[in-house]
Length: 169
Image (cartoon, rainbow, N blue to C red; front, side):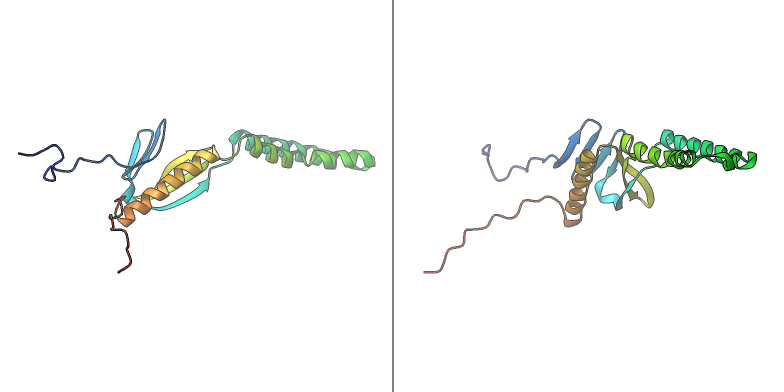
């Protein structure tokens, strides 16, 4: 007769170790899931981080302002208006020339480039995860790193129980 706690019962299946879980993002010891995409952790290699492209609106603002300033400068140069300008007007033109630089700085502060997590899956480079939240990106990348280390080391097995050391008498 087998009892409930008999040693002959098969072990209960253990659920995969959950390393990170938020809506749309789940990292376990076996799988990395973002949205509808899921990859086995053991198949993800060459993981690297990168920054995404700059915001398109900020880039357009810089290009338009630089083009307008260059057009005004060329127009003044060809019409001979540069000879009639005062020192204050030259200082004002120099200050206006800094507008594109200020737009670049403000654009990167206002809408910074996204953090991206890239990796190779079955020989193809894939964008695994992208976020503009630096904290969330760090948590996801650390969870994936831990899952990859566990997969490389053979899993999350508990260390074997050992008898406490006792000095010989």
